[in-house]
Image 1: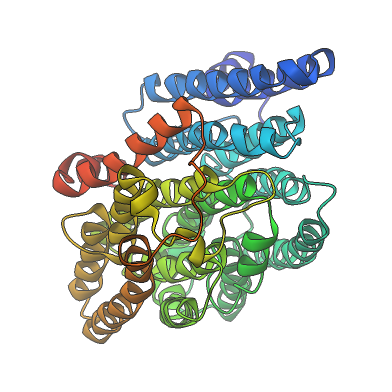
Image 2 (image 1 turned 180 degrees about the horizontal axis):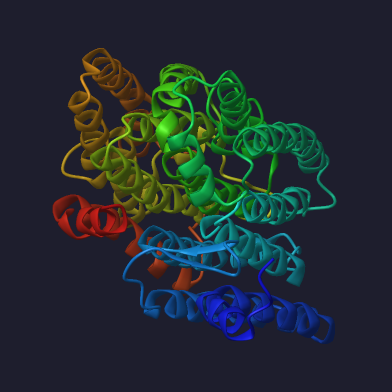
Length: 483
């Protein structure tokens, strides 16, 4: 056994500087919240946003030339981790900006929301930089436990409590399944570090029944975290039952973490078993695109509609991953990042239209929005066109990328299925555009929202348009992250 090397340990800690800073900031905000009055609590949100932006800057400035393994193999830093961390941190900062007015209007502006959000973000960062199965599980559980509490954050809401219980029970089962799969992989390979597992699988027998069983259990857990069919049953109820400020967090930041999780486990640790897990992902991808696109048509609640939309988009992300090529992984990462940017804006529009006693979560609540606010109707139209995959918005390039990836590995039928369900999915997105521009408004109340929220939301939607017109920068970023 090697002795403890202080210099090596300190060097490893330097790579985890963003995580350490965010943990300290979350603890400081938790302590400060005990001493501020309700009238001053908005400043807790300001501090949380500043902490996230500072952490994103620390993560972006880290020199990353290749894959760095530290802390005894528990921590891993590469370009993919750096990009996903920065995007996750900035996304959560935007979510906090969107959430403040919503929380204040319902008299639930508490420091706990921001503290739980910060610790959930910390869990996501640990998950993204995990170099071992142990770190993967620790990061996942830190994030998940915070999300369970956030769903039940509104203590007076019965439906939120019900959603939290459902999320907790199903999430615990999925975590147990994932942990069981990890134990099988450990038993087969004799290693916990992802790099050592990859070497063991690559050097092992071509067909290992035990390893295939382990991969199957892993994919069940991964499918739940991503929200892929048939492990999607929690998403619609949790999206609808949660306070909208929590729904936007679950629908954006946690998806980036789940993408990091699946990339660490499958393409990195189990790359040599790609023929086995890619066939499993084919089933999940097709079912997710089909169920997500078709069932969304029947929804009258926009949060449930966006929940099934998420399921459908997860199917498209899986197309890139199952291809098993660098082009596919890059396309999947581009798709996930672009989807998170668009989803942030879509949920932000719901938060903008909401007010005390009115959630604005029904499709009919968007009727005649153009008559009330032509600007924000245009912003919502940009977001819906992008989700539908209409050019020249960023969603078009995202779908084109994953379709090209599966065509590159001769999955022509899968590309046809993806295009077909993309057309089906366009219906319910364009229906919202029709309601905004061609129906009479049912509500004449002036649209609220602070100047900051309106500005950030407008910038969010315009970014979606800009990335569609000039997608090269984001594409190049994903190519550098996953060469």
